[in-house]
Length: 301
Image (tube, rainbow, N blue to C red; front, side, top):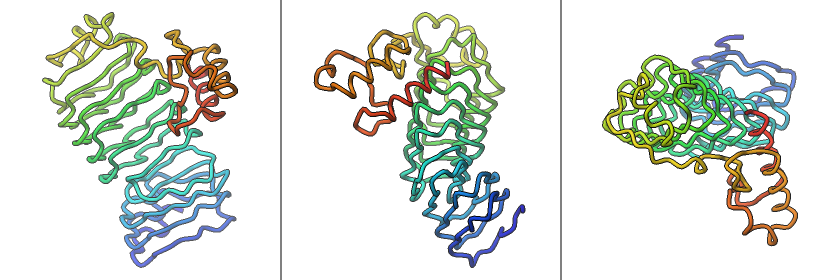
């Protein structure tokens, strides 16, 4: 049911029973005293803004096999996942490798969110996903991402730099609206193949530097919206943003999977042979999770 506990300011904790399969939109909206909640395995659908404005909500336990996730304290996440994860506070948010979509308004209004790790499994960043995350200072979007939704990073006033990867095909309306501190954009795709919504960079300083690949410099200088930047520099290198290029071939393919397996089985023997990063999930080791992330990159092309 929609709004079933909305505005219950005296509610401090919630244990949702195993018979529940769906949590409706705005179900716990503005439960200002809510500090913890456990979402059971049975829940497969969580509505938009289900926990919005729960300002004291610090801990959400998502039990194993849960397929949908809605976060805390204006973080309103609808994130596909399949792991047993304990999330504590917006500031230390980690998105697991099983995530393929960051849903609408996933981290909306998380003013305390200073850093976010977007794994290489993510292909879509939906509308408003990081809207009003004013504490974010930089974002590197992985090469797996193809779609950046409307207002995805709108009003991120602390954002100073952003990297737009090779395979992005669509950037929605007002995606970076009012990112007033954004001074550096690293843009790798061919702008002629990227569909731009309206006012993608509205209220973004146009005197910052737009860094692009040399072969696309003239295209950026003549393309709508991109051409409004006064300082466009063709100084990026192709291989810098080829996530998953373990063997250094400037492409991501099955040879990189073989190279990664070699590193897992015989790291000392192969560690100096492959120039690319094999630790795709950034956990300090090369393991089967990195192989899965690499396969997702290859399949998403």
